[in-house]
Image (tube, rainbow, N blue to C red; front, side):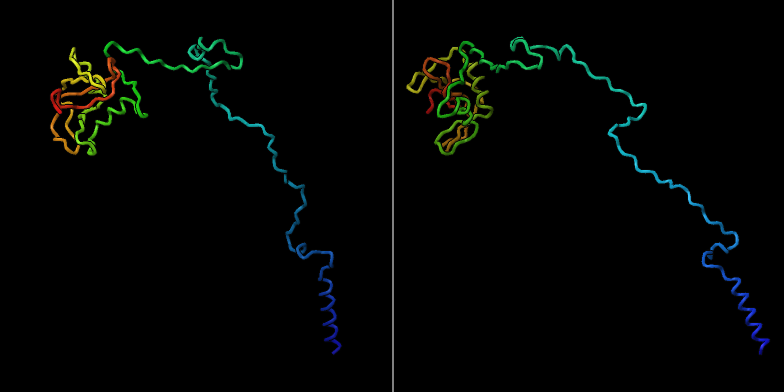
Length: 210
């Protein structure tokens, strides 16, 4: 019995001697273990943008354009401009060219419509009227061509104005709710008395027609 107690006591002393002290770490007793030394931190703060733009190398420079002589042309009608390129401005309006002798004048305006607008009413049929001459082509263009080709044709004087019956092949056709639809080979032109200021124009049968 005493022999067994001695064996247990020696075993306990052996184990007690092999146990590490509290200040020692378990990892230090591992063979070959070497703890890492603390080094200075490698952290560096982020760079702050200073507002400077870094231009890449080898970028070709674009030459600035210089004003040409055309850009420096000065309008003499506006006078000398100051250093700020500010000067008087004028509105240039083109005056209508004077009419040639015996040329039709389309300047008449009645009820808010010009003579050309009134003549263009004969570009299509109007079934609200008993008879309505309708041009095959552009009314103003056909009227001008017919007038230019009339020569020394006479005219009839009526209270509504001077009336010309100008021969013009295939000028248009007879429309309206009583119209025959037949081709018309005259252009009837009405002007203000003793002038070439046109009032109306439309295809017509002829001077002896209705």
